[in-house]
Image (cartoon, rainbow, N blue to C red; front, side, top):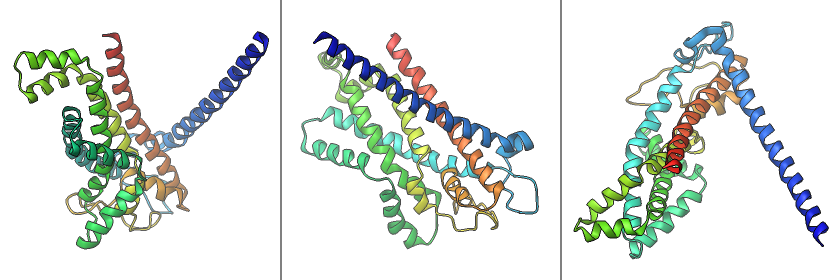
Length: 288
């Protein structure tokens, strides 16, 4: 019987090791492809590839760059973060402080539904509600479509993080006569590293979202031939990085495909930077 269990454990260990190796190989292959193809414009044209506009002329050998696309992405994600992080954090505080109220229970369930729902639905809602009514593709509308992603995630994670704190800490604050909001301030300061790490992950989450933006910030010019005109206060042309990657994959122009790889490299670098910051903060928590 002991040999039988040992054989099962050995077989399970081999299976898990093989599966883990395959997943690791796929991840390394993906990252290697992004770095190899995405670095081509940087090697040939230097840092200009991160500043210039895409060169859509089929006669020119130059690639251009993804500078306006990065700017457009930062505007959309920045607006989403400025609105979504405070809103999600305050919602999480309410869920934590009033866990038994009816409103809190309903809000928690709705937030969990939003977390699990297909993100493309959010873009469709914003498009049908605002874009068709105003006839403009404003950066604010793209940011609103991402709010459906960042707010539920931050709210639920904030509530869960505060719930992991020792209950004695909250009881001590109450016994000292602190008000409800001062107590929440003390608890938030005690868990600030975990809260900031959670916010970093949420920003990385919306940074790579494509579904909502494919509808709200859909491509209205021919990605291979059309002009690139950018009006930062009125429209979101050129499109953000994620939508450009999708359009570049469908382009017949080789230089646009390569610029799509460069956009992947830029997005991957941004996401890795945020994850590294989050990891450093959580590691600090474990040490403390």
